Amino acid sequence: VPDDYTPGTDELSGKTLLVTGAGDGIGRAAALAYARHGAEVLLLGRTEKKLEAVYDAIISEGLREPGIIPLDLATANEDQYRELAQQLSGTFDKLDGLLHNAGLLGDRRSMAQTSLQLWHQVMQANVNATQMLTQVLFPLLEQAPSASVVMTSSGVGRKGRAFWGAYAVSKFAVEGMMQVWADEMGDTSRIRFNSLNPGAVNTAMRRTAYPAEPPTNNPDPETLMRGWIYLMSDASAAVNGQALSAQ
Ligand code: NDP
Image (tube, rainbow, N blue to C red):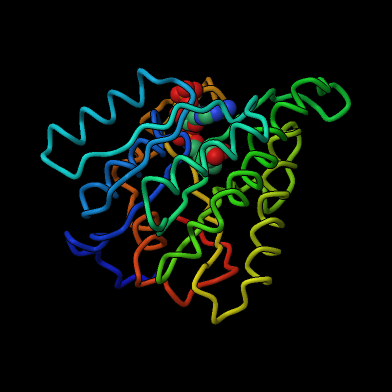
Protein backbone atom coordinates (compact mmCIF):
# COMPACT_ATOMS: atom_id res chain seq x y z
CA VAL A 1 0.00 0.00 0.00
CA PRO A 2 1.60 3.29 -1.09
CA ASP A 3 2.81 5.40 1.87
CA ASP A 4 1.18 8.54 0.52
CA TYR A 5 -2.26 6.98 0.01
CA THR A 6 -4.95 8.82 1.98
CA PRO A 7 -8.55 7.87 1.15
CA GLY A 8 -11.10 10.65 0.70
CA THR A 9 -14.49 10.42 2.43
CA ASP A 10 -16.21 9.59 -0.88
CA GLU A 11 -13.40 7.23 -1.97
CA LEU A 12 -15.78 4.30 -2.58
CA SER A 13 -19.00 6.09 -3.50
CA GLY A 14 -21.01 4.39 -6.22
CA LYS A 15 -19.48 1.02 -5.40
CA THR A 16 -21.23 -2.11 -4.17
CA LEU A 17 -18.85 -4.25 -2.12
CA LEU A 18 -19.39 -7.70 -0.63
CA VAL A 19 -17.51 -8.62 2.55
CA THR A 20 -17.42 -12.20 3.88
CA GLY A 21 -17.12 -12.74 7.62
CA ALA A 22 -18.52 -9.24 8.07
CA GLY A 23 -19.94 -9.87 11.54
CA ASP A 24 -16.76 -9.72 13.57
CA GLY A 25 -13.08 -8.82 13.65
CA ILE A 26 -11.41 -7.50 10.51
CA GLY A 27 -14.48 -8.09 8.31
CA ARG A 28 -16.68 -6.00 10.58
CA ALA A 29 -14.12 -3.18 10.57
CA ALA A 30 -13.75 -3.37 6.78
CA ALA A 31 -17.52 -3.28 6.24
CA LEU A 32 -17.82 -0.20 8.46
CA ALA A 33 -14.85 1.49 6.79
CA TYR A 34 -16.26 0.82 3.33
CA ALA A 35 -19.66 2.24 4.33
CA ARG A 36 -17.97 5.30 5.87
CA HIS A 37 -16.22 5.91 2.54
CA GLY A 38 -19.47 5.87 0.60
CA ALA A 39 -19.90 2.24 -0.48
CA GLU A 40 -23.02 0.13 -0.37
CA VAL A 41 -21.90 -2.93 1.58
CA LEU A 42 -23.23 -6.50 1.46
CA LEU A 43 -22.55 -8.24 4.76
CA LEU A 44 -22.05 -11.99 4.41
CA GLY A 45 -21.53 -14.26 7.42
CA ARG A 46 -22.79 -17.24 9.34
CA THR A 47 -24.12 -15.55 12.52
CA GLU A 48 -27.09 -13.41 11.56
CA LYS A 49 -27.19 -11.56 14.90
CA LYS A 50 -23.66 -10.26 14.37
CA LEU A 51 -24.49 -9.15 10.82
CA GLU A 52 -27.56 -7.33 12.17
CA ALA A 53 -25.42 -5.53 14.73
CA VAL A 54 -23.08 -4.32 11.95
CA TYR A 55 -26.13 -3.31 9.89
CA ASP A 56 -27.41 -1.27 12.86
CA ALA A 57 -24.04 0.39 13.38
CA ILE A 58 -23.93 1.46 9.71
CA ILE A 59 -27.51 2.75 9.78
CA SER A 60 -26.94 4.64 13.06
CA GLU A 61 -24.15 6.59 11.36
CA GLY A 62 -26.56 7.62 8.61
CA LEU A 63 -24.62 5.71 5.93
CA ARG A 64 -25.95 3.78 2.91
CA GLU A 65 -28.18 0.89 3.93
CA PRO A 66 -26.23 -2.37 3.77
CA GLY A 67 -27.52 -5.78 2.71
CA ILE A 68 -27.35 -8.91 4.86
CA ILE A 69 -26.45 -12.34 3.44
CA PRO A 70 -26.55 -15.17 5.98
CA LEU A 71 -24.42 -18.03 4.68
CA ASP A 72 -22.18 -20.62 6.32
CA LEU A 73 -19.21 -20.95 4.01
CA ALA A 74 -18.08 -24.19 5.64
CA THR A 75 -21.27 -26.04 4.74
CA ALA A 76 -22.86 -24.17 1.78
CA ASN A 77 -23.35 -26.32 -1.31
CA GLU A 78 -23.21 -25.47 -4.98
CA ASP A 79 -26.96 -24.84 -5.19
CA GLN A 80 -26.78 -22.29 -2.37
CA TYR A 81 -23.96 -20.42 -4.15
CA ARG A 82 -25.93 -20.37 -7.42
CA GLU A 83 -29.05 -19.20 -5.61
CA LEU A 84 -27.09 -16.40 -3.94
CA ALA A 85 -25.64 -15.29 -7.28
CA GLN A 86 -29.10 -15.32 -8.82
CA GLN A 87 -30.55 -13.23 -6.01
CA LEU A 88 -27.74 -10.70 -6.23
CA SER A 89 -27.94 -10.37 -10.01
CA GLY A 90 -31.69 -9.78 -9.63
CA THR A 91 -31.02 -6.85 -7.29
CA PHE A 92 -27.71 -5.35 -8.45
CA ASP A 93 -26.48 -4.65 -11.94
CA LYS A 94 -22.83 -4.92 -10.93
CA LEU A 95 -20.49 -5.86 -8.09
CA ASP A 96 -17.42 -3.63 -7.70
CA GLY A 97 -15.59 -5.57 -5.05
CA LEU A 98 -15.41 -8.83 -3.17
CA LEU A 99 -13.45 -9.08 0.08
CA HIS A 100 -12.82 -12.71 0.98
CA ASN A 101 -12.20 -12.23 4.67
CA ALA A 102 -14.01 -15.05 6.48
CA GLY A 103 -11.56 -17.61 7.74
CA LEU A 104 -11.33 -20.60 10.01
CA LEU A 105 -8.27 -21.12 12.23
CA GLY A 106 -8.85 -24.80 12.90
CA ASP A 107 -6.58 -26.49 15.35
CA ARG A 108 -3.03 -25.52 16.34
CA ARG A 109 -1.49 -29.01 16.12
CA SER A 110 1.39 -30.70 14.39
CA MET A 111 0.79 -31.98 10.85
CA ALA A 112 1.12 -35.55 12.15
CA GLN A 113 -1.68 -34.96 14.68
CA THR A 114 -4.04 -32.90 12.54
CA SER A 115 -7.61 -34.19 12.50
CA LEU A 116 -8.72 -35.00 8.97
CA GLN A 117 -12.21 -33.71 9.70
CA LEU A 118 -10.89 -30.32 10.75
CA TRP A 119 -8.54 -30.31 7.77
CA HIS A 120 -11.53 -30.63 5.43
CA GLN A 121 -13.48 -27.92 7.29
CA VAL A 122 -10.63 -25.43 7.10
CA MET A 123 -10.06 -26.15 3.39
CA GLN A 124 -13.80 -25.85 2.74
CA ALA A 125 -14.16 -22.48 4.49
CA ASN A 126 -10.84 -20.90 3.49
CA VAL A 127 -10.17 -22.32 0.02
CA ASN A 128 -13.18 -23.99 -1.63
CA ALA A 129 -15.68 -21.33 -0.52
CA THR A 130 -13.39 -18.59 -1.83
CA GLN A 131 -13.26 -20.22 -5.25
CA MET A 132 -16.99 -21.03 -5.39
CA LEU A 133 -18.08 -17.56 -4.35
CA THR A 134 -15.69 -15.90 -6.79
CA GLN A 135 -16.85 -18.14 -9.61
CA VAL A 136 -20.59 -17.58 -9.12
CA LEU A 137 -20.15 -13.81 -8.68
CA PHE A 138 -17.76 -13.45 -11.63
CA PRO A 139 -20.47 -12.41 -14.13
CA LEU A 140 -21.59 -9.63 -11.76
CA LEU A 141 -17.98 -8.50 -11.21
CA GLU A 142 -17.59 -8.36 -15.00
CA GLN A 143 -20.37 -5.77 -15.15
CA ALA A 144 -18.39 -3.27 -13.04
CA PRO A 145 -16.15 -0.72 -14.81
CA SER A 146 -13.28 -1.76 -12.51
CA ALA A 147 -13.71 -4.56 -9.96
CA SER A 148 -11.44 -5.76 -7.17
CA VAL A 149 -11.25 -9.18 -5.58
CA VAL A 150 -9.22 -9.31 -2.37
CA MET A 151 -8.22 -12.62 -0.82
CA THR A 152 -7.14 -12.53 2.82
CA SER A 153 -3.87 -14.28 3.44
CA SER A 154 -1.55 -14.60 6.41
CA GLY A 155 2.14 -14.63 7.24
CA VAL A 156 1.90 -18.43 7.49
CA GLY A 157 0.45 -18.51 3.96
CA ARG A 158 3.70 -17.05 2.61
CA LYS A 159 6.17 -18.98 4.74
CA GLY A 160 5.18 -22.26 6.38
CA ARG A 161 5.42 -22.48 10.15
CA ALA A 162 5.26 -25.39 12.60
CA PHE A 163 1.89 -26.15 14.20
CA TRP A 164 -0.16 -23.98 11.85
CA GLY A 165 -1.45 -27.05 9.97
CA ALA A 166 -4.41 -26.80 7.65
CA TYR A 167 -4.72 -23.04 8.21
CA ALA A 168 -1.23 -22.34 6.84
CA VAL A 169 -1.74 -24.72 3.92
CA SER A 170 -5.12 -23.14 3.15
CA LYS A 171 -3.55 -19.67 3.01
CA PHE A 172 -0.86 -20.90 0.60
CA ALA A 173 -3.74 -22.19 -1.54
CA VAL A 174 -5.40 -18.78 -1.33
CA GLU A 175 -2.20 -17.12 -2.59
CA GLY A 176 -2.06 -19.61 -5.47
CA MET A 177 -5.73 -19.10 -6.30
CA MET A 178 -5.20 -15.33 -6.39
CA GLN A 179 -2.22 -15.72 -8.75
CA VAL A 180 -4.05 -18.01 -11.17
CA TRP A 181 -7.10 -15.73 -11.35
CA ALA A 182 -4.89 -12.64 -11.70
CA ASP A 183 -2.84 -14.22 -14.48
CA GLU A 184 -5.97 -15.21 -16.37
CA MET A 185 -7.25 -11.63 -16.12
CA GLY A 186 -4.00 -10.09 -17.40
CA ASP A 187 -2.87 -6.58 -16.62
CA THR A 188 -5.47 -4.81 -18.72
CA SER A 189 -8.41 -6.61 -17.19
CA ARG A 190 -11.21 -4.75 -15.47
CA ILE A 191 -11.14 -7.31 -12.65
CA ARG A 192 -8.06 -7.39 -10.44
CA PHE A 193 -7.10 -10.06 -7.91
CA ASN A 194 -4.74 -9.42 -5.01
CA SER A 195 -4.02 -10.92 -1.60
CA LEU A 196 -3.67 -9.03 1.65
CA ASN A 197 -1.88 -10.21 4.78
CA PRO A 198 -3.40 -8.34 7.74
CA GLY A 199 -0.43 -8.97 10.07
CA ALA A 200 -1.17 -9.43 13.77
CA VAL A 201 -4.56 -7.85 14.59
CA ASN A 202 -6.47 -7.89 17.86
CA THR A 203 -9.46 -10.11 16.99
CA ALA A 204 -11.07 -13.27 18.37
CA MET A 205 -8.98 -15.36 15.98
CA ARG A 206 -5.70 -13.84 17.11
CA ARG A 207 -6.66 -14.23 20.77
CA THR A 208 -7.47 -17.92 20.16
CA ALA A 209 -4.21 -18.53 18.30
CA TYR A 210 -2.13 -16.77 20.99
CA PRO A 211 -4.02 -17.24 24.27
CA ALA A 212 -1.07 -16.11 26.42
CA GLU A 213 -0.52 -12.85 24.54
CA PRO A 214 -1.92 -9.58 25.95
CA PRO A 215 -4.56 -8.40 23.43
CA THR A 216 -3.15 -4.86 23.64
CA ASN A 217 0.03 -6.09 21.90
CA ASN A 218 -1.76 -5.86 18.56
CA PRO A 219 -3.65 -3.05 16.82
CA ASP A 220 -7.46 -3.11 16.70
CA PRO A 221 -8.80 -3.75 13.20
CA GLU A 222 -10.49 -0.31 13.01
CA THR A 223 -7.10 1.41 13.17
CA LEU A 224 -5.69 -0.47 10.18
CA MET A 225 -8.18 -0.05 7.37
CA ARG A 226 -6.06 1.98 4.89
CA GLY A 227 -4.94 -1.12 2.96
CA TRP A 228 -8.45 -2.58 2.80
CA ILE A 229 -9.84 0.70 1.45
CA TYR A 230 -6.96 1.11 -1.00
CA LEU A 231 -7.58 -2.28 -2.59
CA MET A 232 -11.28 -1.49 -3.16
CA SER A 233 -10.62 2.03 -4.40
CA ASP A 234 -9.86 3.05 -8.01
CA ALA A 235 -6.43 4.08 -6.66
CA SER A 236 -5.44 0.40 -6.97
CA ALA A 237 -7.09 -0.14 -10.39
CA ALA A 238 -3.74 -1.10 -11.99
CA VAL A 239 -2.63 -3.42 -9.17
CA ASN A 240 -3.16 -7.08 -10.12
CA GLY A 241 -1.62 -10.32 -8.89
CA GLN A 242 0.15 -8.75 -5.92
CA ALA A 243 0.64 -10.16 -2.42
CA LEU A 244 0.27 -7.09 -0.19
CA SER A 245 0.72 -6.58 3.54
CA ALA A 246 -1.37 -4.28 5.68
CA GLN A 247 1.32 -3.65 8.30
P1 NDP B 1 -12.39 -13.53 13.39
O1 NDP B 1 -12.42 -14.95 13.81
O2 NDP B 1 -12.35 -12.47 14.42
O3 NDP B 1 -13.54 -13.23 12.37
C1 NDP B 1 -13.78 -14.09 11.29
C2 NDP B 1 -15.13 -13.82 10.71
O4 NDP B 1 -15.37 -14.80 9.70
C3 NDP B 1 -16.24 -13.95 11.75
O5 NDP B 1 -17.21 -12.97 11.54
C4 NDP B 1 -16.79 -15.35 11.46
O6 NDP B 1 -18.15 -15.50 11.76
C5 NDP B 1 -16.60 -15.44 9.95
N1 NDP B 1 -16.60 -16.83 9.55
C6 NDP B 1 -15.81 -17.83 9.99
N2 NDP B 1 -16.17 -18.99 9.45
C7 NDP B 1 -17.22 -18.71 8.63
C8 NDP B 1 -18.04 -19.51 7.80
N3 NDP B 1 -17.89 -20.81 7.73
N4 NDP B 1 -19.03 -18.92 7.11
C9 NDP B 1 -19.23 -17.59 7.19
N5 NDP B 1 -18.48 -16.78 7.96
C10 NDP B 1 -17.50 -17.35 8.68
O7 NDP B 1 -11.08 -13.44 12.47
P2 NDP B 1 -10.23 -12.20 11.98
O8 NDP B 1 -11.07 -11.01 11.82
O9 NDP B 1 -9.02 -12.14 12.80
O10 NDP B 1 -9.76 -12.76 10.56
C11 NDP B 1 -10.22 -12.28 9.33
C12 NDP B 1 -9.31 -12.82 8.26
O11 NDP B 1 -7.99 -12.34 8.47
C13 NDP B 1 -9.22 -14.34 8.23
O12 NDP B 1 -9.18 -14.79 6.90
C14 NDP B 1 -7.90 -14.62 8.93
O13 NDP B 1 -7.35 -15.84 8.52
C15 NDP B 1 -7.08 -13.43 8.49
N6 NDP B 1 -5.93 -13.10 9.35
C16 NDP B 1 -6.11 -12.59 10.62
C17 NDP B 1 -5.03 -12.27 11.41
C18 NDP B 1 -5.19 -11.69 12.79
O14 NDP B 1 -4.16 -11.44 13.46
N7 NDP B 1 -6.38 -11.45 13.29
C19 NDP B 1 -3.65 -12.44 10.92
C20 NDP B 1 -3.56 -12.98 9.59
C21 NDP B 1 -4.68 -13.28 8.85
P3 NDP B 1 -18.66 -15.74 13.28
O15 NDP B 1 -18.43 -14.43 13.96
O16 NDP B 1 -20.06 -16.06 13.10
O17 NDP B 1 -17.80 -16.83 13.83
